[in-house]
Amino acid sequence: MTSPPPAVLATYTRNGFTESIHTGHAVVVNATGEVIRHWGDPDRVIFPRSAAKPAQAAALVRHGLDLPDHLLALAVSSHGGERAHLAGVHEILGMAGLTTDALQNPADFPLDPQERDVWVCENRRPSRLAMTCSGKHAAMLLTCVVNGWSVDTYLEPDHPLQQSIRWQVEALAGEQVRQLGVDGCGAPVMAVSITGLARSMARSAAGEPHSPERRVWTAMTAYPEFVGGQYSDVTRLMKAVPGLASKNGFEGVGIASFADGRAIAVKVDDGSERARQVAVAAILAGMGVDRSALEPFLTIPVPGGDDVVGQVSSPLA
Image (cartoon, rainbow, N blue to C red):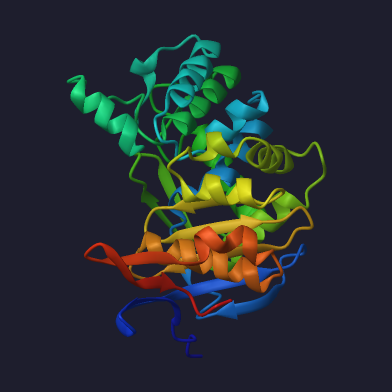
């Protein structure tokens, strides 16, 4: 059986001329995980990248991670390296009796451009603490300490931590992991279908109030500033649409879900972040979200000199 071809998720126009087209795949599922609308191939297998973090964090909570909601949101984050983010990572590591030396994610500058400029001006070196995934890694380390697991090999695929994450990813997605890889932060990344990714968010939103997945979902909606940061379109989107949980992943992956269990997942084939942003917003508009709240996300201006001469937008609304 031939898979459906990719759909147009976004276009880049300049002076009325379509300069670039972004294709990919997107799905909307209901609270039971049933596909109610799709564009492209709903069975397309993808690496969720950082959009896997809600499911990963649910596995940590299931195995004893007990954090206040703002720090649990930080465990899900692709944070900007703002001071509150870095203080939160220190706090999680302190609960484990560890220092930043235990982190095994790569060293980097803060993702937030303002914070990055400060670091460069102060001649500060890249650090593991500032790397955008350090919250997840700190939470992984604390979970290892709680369970008496090795903190030296916590990124190995056969480590009990990663095995528990794989079980959780498969349970929420309702399917087996199709491929195992290494994410940019050094942790295992597990491929699932785009429908499985959306189903994972649906089940998290519609889970029992005290279930691990629902706890993570609640933390995300309560503290969007810890999921990304002031620079992040995901954080701004959650603030604009109260009750929405959303997360991005590198290479054009986006997810979102509502308290009633409806959820979406998007994968842009060429990995474009601009296309991911407008496609997610357009799908939300099509689901009935107030367009006035979505206005800052539905289009991205295209400059021509000192003027705006076009936009990035999505036909999915």
